[in-house]
Picture 1: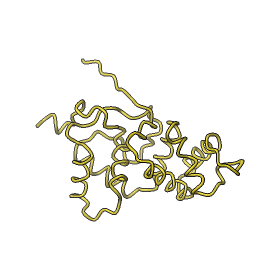
Picture 2: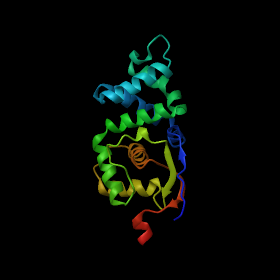
Picture 3: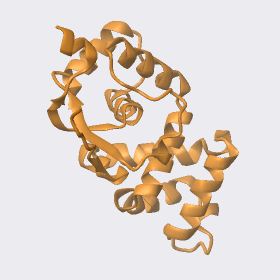
Length: 183
């Protein structure tokens, strides 16, 4: 039996794949939809915001207006794996339709996934292997074929792919899905 070890990157490594404007829009979405999140997610994010985010003029950053809180959370999102994972999990919970669409899409492409609603914040980070031949351009085109009426941005679909798969596209030739192995 071959001894394989998985390599993980911390969750905040995703920042290498996000443009600043999109990163800010994800945080704005999380904070503007905050009241719709499950209690444990709200508590986790609130605790992290109080501890890690500094908003000038507010002793408790958690009560700052959404735009200020989002803007001042960007640096924490870029440097803190726990905050990043909680924010992306919250973002995925606020986008249940897209989450299910991307999950079903990846399953049809034979990606190995945890259940769609699984709490990925419990994982140690992102795997570094990516299915061979499945770059973002290929996935964008294939997703659009399945969902020609999609209203989500390509960035949203890509973030959901990364989050649901638990993978960042660093080593793009190291992993073959079962369908690729049999072809």
